[in-house]
Structures are given as structure tokens and as C-alpha cells.
Image (cartoon, rainbow over all chains, first blue to last red; front, side, top):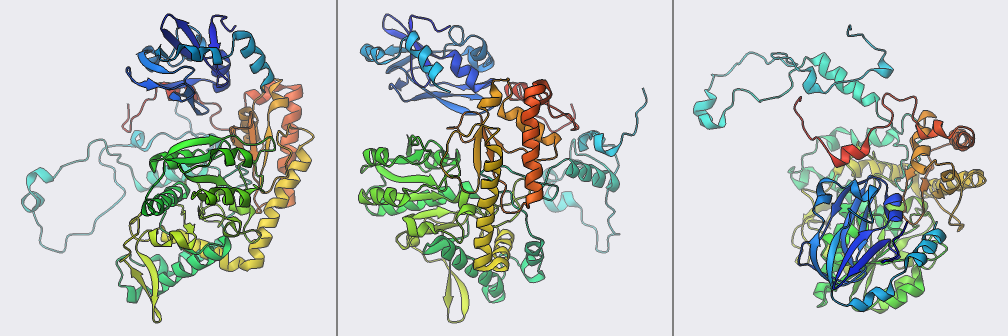
Amino acid sequence: MYPENFRYTKEHEWVSVEGETGTVGITDHAQAELGDIVYVDLPKVGAHIEQGKSLGSVESVKAVSDIYSPVSGEVVAINTDLADHPEKLNTDPHGDAWLVKIKLGNPGEVQNLMTSADYLSYVGAEK
Amino acid sequence: MIDKVTPHITQNEPLLFERSSPGKKAYQLPELDVPEVDAAEALGAENVRAEIAGFPEVSEVEAIRHFTRLSTWNFAIDYGMYPLGSCTMKYNPRINEQAARTEGLAWAHPYQPEALAQGCLEVMATLEAALAEITGMDAVTLQPAAGAHGELTGILLIRALLEKRGNPRKKILIPDSAHGTNPATAAIAGYAIENIKSSETGVLDVAALEQIVNEDVAALMVTNPNTLGVFENNIAHAAEILHGKGAMLYMDGANMNALVGIARPGDFGVDVMHLNLHKTFSTPHGGGGPGAGPVAVKKVLEPFLPAPRLKKSGKRWAWDYRRKHSIGRVKAFYGNFGVLIRALAYILAHGGPGLRNATMDAVLNAVYIRKRLEAYFDLPYQSPNMHEVVFSDDRQAAKGVRTGDFAKRLIDYGFHPYTVSFPLIVHGAMMIEPTETEGKREIDQFIDAMISIAKEVETDPQLVKTAPHLTRASRVDETTAARKPILRWKPA
């Protein structure tokens, strides 16, 4: 369910690191809690993002929620496909529906995040 | 297939544009009794049009039926209980309407000379004084048109004061149980927002507050009682912490229905707050507006209030426009005057003891609902509640039935739904606020409906998941409507 090569936040985002770049998305648990997602607001390419700060928001039929960045750095790509197909966040949150790619400013930060096993027990404990 | 006449209750109604047929009209002008002027000549041909494209053309009876039918599709407090938590949907007494229709008030013109508007000015001055007394504050502006508008006005007052002191500061602190308008207000006023997590008992975590408050913090925005309906019993301590660092305490007055006549925010350290006259003071609310969101302040903020201010010179009321520290107007003229009259009528009709009784009944009703329903629903925060109670759908979610399904099934039982999925700190929130309006029989009917639905969840969850069954339309596709909206006003 939760890929082992990803790292996870308490706010239900994931990051997958390859070289100097981290791909960021929201977790399957997050999409299930949000319900049908209807709109995604992403930062511009080139924006500087800090770990734990908002990098955008997702809007579902229930609520608008901030996305908190799992890592710091510069946004090098955003998933423009989501503008027309926000529903992909409900069907493939760990794959096709990634949100942004960030050039890591501080690769060590990833160590502060949860492993998939930690995250699984975290969402199990959370109501 | 023939076009059948359907019984009224299930009748569907097309758009007025779809009813249009060229040449129909619902007016007849009298014969011209002055010399005719050529409009093109008088105004210039480019300013004259022969027709308004796409404008609906219908007869008088068609227009009347259209809007009358639509009006009956609505739910209103005059039809039944409206337990929408956080909204205080109380009954609007008819005495308020009578007062607002008093000829001299209803027909007053905002440009009427002050000498001929003394009655209107006295209505406003009396209301300002009454609200100041109820809140324990020093001065009140009646200009803001609604709650969120009052919030923005209040935070702009704080910014003006802090700017005058030399530093407007950077941040506003907001608990995670807050109304969404609070962070929106802070952002529009140019502040960064920092969230504070609620404690395990659902109130402000004062230890956490003490850690966060520094010279960057302009204010804490807090709702009291909070959105769980729980009184913030550490509020005076929180005020001390803020004041110690030169920050202010803003109170969102959305839940004043639990405090009027019992406790005064001015006495527990609040510097500035707004009131929703359309909630607490029984003026029409929700679609029927307009509302009013007066702001009450302590003396230190008074110089910054929106201009003009009422002042008495001799025996007469006058507007004082020369207010050099004022943040300026926040609304044309003097606020939504018709709403102000209704609120004053409500306050005067009740008097102090009456307002206090209303508050106690509002709390009693909510506590009664809690006691009768807590055997059937999960209650995530056990602290004593005041005017509203927040359950969670945890027990029913096991059967796949969520708070929104419950709300839709309530419609079949003849009640307006409670507030769904708010506050966000409660998973699957069911937020119920009966107000003092309802008597025991109505409340028992509501409780019985909730219990009956809880039993349906056990025996036939599908019945609840597909509700409502007794309405003209059942579930609409909200998701597609939001993802692929088709916005138009003309017939397709």
C-alpha cells in the first residue's frame, strides 16, 4: 500500500528521493479522507519551499486543505496534468498524481520523516 | 408523450429564461403625458439599445408563480427546526419585522439631513450602547455588513494600533478549531497565520500559547465558546500572556448565544470582537440576509474605528467625520440599517433578564440533546458543552454511513441537517445547535429522528446512504459539478 522507498509526513504527504530531486505527493490515506478531489493549487516552478510549510492546496467536495512540503528546496517541475484531471489524485496518489518535484536544499531532512512501516502504524493509530 | 401537470410538491421548475416567449411582458406603462424625446438624440445613439439580448420575457402570473414555487423549495426556520451548528438559526420574532417596517425608519434616506434623521441616529446610538453593555466593551461600530466583514474590520483596527505604536507585527495565531473565516481574515489583513493545536479536552492549549507568543505576534483570534461548544476556561490567562508581549486578543463572536447576559468578553480580557446580529440577535440569516457584524472594542482601539462616528452635541445626534486615526469607512453609509432596527427590537423586547433566559435555554437545549444522544453517538470531547454539541460519526462509519449521509436522511424526517464535517478537529463531525427557539416537543422529535436513523444504520444502511428519498431531487453529482462546472445564464 505505502511504497517502502517513500518517506512520509504526519500531514499525509510523501516524498520519493532520486539523486538530488524529491518527488512529492499526498498519500492514499489523505485522498481517502479528503474524498473526491476537484481542484489542486500548486506553486510555480522556481518557487522556494521550506519543509513543513504550505506548498499549495487540494480542494475536495468537503474542504480545502494545505499541502505541507516534506522537504525544503526549489520547485523544478509541477504536475500540470492535475489541472484538468484532479480525479487522478483519488485513483493514483502514489504514482501518476505526483504534485511537484523539488531540488533538495537539505537532503538530510528526509531522515526526519516516517518510513512506510511507521506511517502505516501512524494512520492505524489515528482515527 | 404529453406534457402533464404535476402535483405541486413534485413539480419541477425550469429557469425563467426557459419560460421566455418573445413579446410577453408583465407591465403596462401609462400613456405619455409629456412631450416625447428621442432617446438617441438626447443620449447619443451609441448609448441606446433596441433590446436586451437573452432577457426573459414572461407574463406577470408566470413571474409570480416561478418565484413563489422556488420559494417553497427552501427550508426555513418558519417551517421547522434548523439545528445547523455554529450558525445559531433562531426564530426571527415578528415584532422585529414590525419595528423595521415603521414608516419613518423604513423610508429614511441615508442622505436625509441629520436634523430630520434624529430617530434613526438614536436607534443606532441605543444599539451601540446596548451591545457595548452586553459585551463589556467600551465602543461599538455598526458598519460591518456580516461576521467575516467584522473580523476584517477588527483585525485592521489591531493593525492600525500596532502601526501607531511603531510595528504592525507579522503573525496572527489561530486555534485549529477555528472558523475558516479567521485565517482568511488574517491573510487579507496582511498577516501570516500560525495554527495552535487544541488540547486533548478541546480547548486552547495555554502552555503552547505561552511558547509561541513573541514580539512578532499581533493577536490571537479565538472563538469563545469554541466550535466544540466548549467554554475556553483559560481565556483570561491567555489574554494575560498576549498582553504581556504587547499582542491583542480578538474574539470571534459567532457563539455569543452561549454568553449573552451571563459572561462579558470585555471582562475576560478580550480587546476587540465582532457580533453577528443575524445569529445572536435574531435577524434573518442565510440567503435571506443581509446580516450585520458590529465590532466592539476596548478604549485603546476606539480612535481607529471606522468613520463617521455618532456623537451627541447638546440634545442632538450628529455624525463626526473628523477622525484622524480612523481606518476609514468599511461600508457605504452606516451599515445595514434595517438589520440594526431588528436587533434593537429584539434586545429591548427581551430586556436583560429575557436575554439571560434565552441564553440559558439555548444551553439547556443543547445539553439535553447531548444527554439523550450520547448513548447512540461517539462524543470525542467530553468537556461540558454550552449552546451546541459535536458528535462524531465513528460508530456509524463502521457500517459505511458517514455524517453527510445522516444529514441527508434527516431531511426525510423533516429537519434541516446539522452542520456536517465541522469543526475539522472532529473526524466526521455532526455539529448540532438547537438554539433557545425550540421547545421540548420539537427537540424530542429531532432526537427521536436521530435515534431512528442510527437504528436504520444497523438494519438497512443502504436506506441512509441513498437518502433523501422524499425530496424533489435526491443526491446531485457534486463532484462533477465542481470538477467540470458549466456556468451560464442563457438557455443552452
